Image (cartoon, rainbow, N blue to C red; front, side):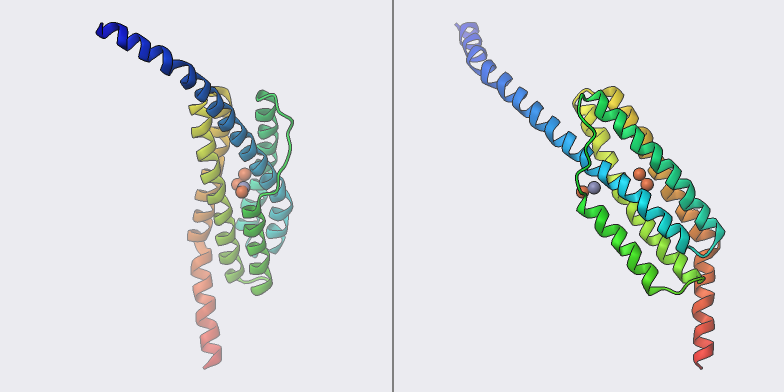
Length: 196
Ligand code: FE
Ligand code: ZN
Ligand code: FE
Ligand code: FE
């Protein structure tokens, strides 16, 4: 009797649960595709923003770091197109308000700092690291989501990009530590001296 009750319960519970699971799966997939469209727009937008930042940078070290990441960004765009293809979806870009805001911040840093100063580079590095952190958060979540959905190939493609964003962040920290923050502090001192 106990067995019979369990069976009945299973039977009645199973059908809606399977339906619900399927619905959740397609909703999750929809959300995943939407997030891909967002980061696709963001990466494309960065191919326009990074050259501006590169041009504005003071040191050769920062210029080359930004140039290198521009090339990496182009391959990330292709990788996303590959992901869309694997998902059987058209690669469509959907405006990412966050990335637009972050790059606008980069623009205002350029406006507010003087050409050829270490302070300019400090500001650019900060702006670029905010971008990298946004990307790290996004790709980190996307890798997790792809794994949950059982999309192993997609997850490993996105993992490659995630690693590149982390490397870019580390590189920017190194550039800042190497000399720029020190030079910017010196710049501040000089200005104070001039004012006295
Ligand atoms: Fe990127
Ligand atoms: Zn975004
Ligand atoms: Fe967004
Ligand atoms: Fe990046």
